[in-house]
Image 1 (cartoon, rainbow, N blue to C red):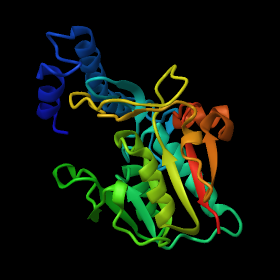
Image 2 (cartoon, rainbow, N blue to C red; image 1 turned 135 degrees about the vertical axis):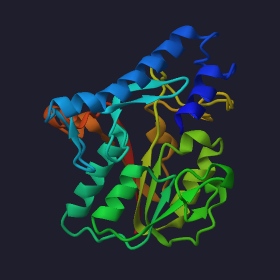
Image 3 (cartoon, one colour; image 1 turned 30 degrees about the vertical axis):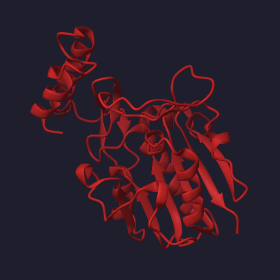
Length: 270
């Protein structure tokens, strides 16, 4: 988003949770995060080397960049090279492990739902087949999609897709069960869905909520650790992969991945 547009929608819009005259403390945190993002590249030019590395694009430096929105600030999480968040870096590492496992066939047809820049980088630089990018509506085509796709009624034939990437999409759609059933339907037998959703801190049970158009994330769900139970189906096997259990402490530090980040691998039964 251009800088002036970000200021207008984040600090000046009276409906924004970071409106500077209504919520000055949140506005100050957003502004400080933006200033730090501007200063970090200059510091890295002065002091070469670094303690952080992106496993996606191999960028190296002292700090990842801050994610800034009106209602959420995540410090030192975005790679300036490929734009990956820590959740994307964790997922890419998992995809690589899957591809390197003995007997794993290279997927022939992949579909990315609002595909992240990190997954696009992986597909384009590591010899994988083309991944068809999708987005939900023409007015917000941020991901350079190949086709528009409403996951509640996907325009894809049953059993035709090898892999589906669905990262931070399901929390935006009220009809969760319909979406999960559609993912299962379009996967071929033996196919894999890679799912990621955000967790609401301190929440014990997932719950649907009213979408707030003035919040940056416009979530229809607040998910808790019981998310894996919500997506269980007789037709596939669900495995939860938690970063802190999959990566050692040095990898978590070097790649700046939250140990509580996780994804779910859903394998359709043959």
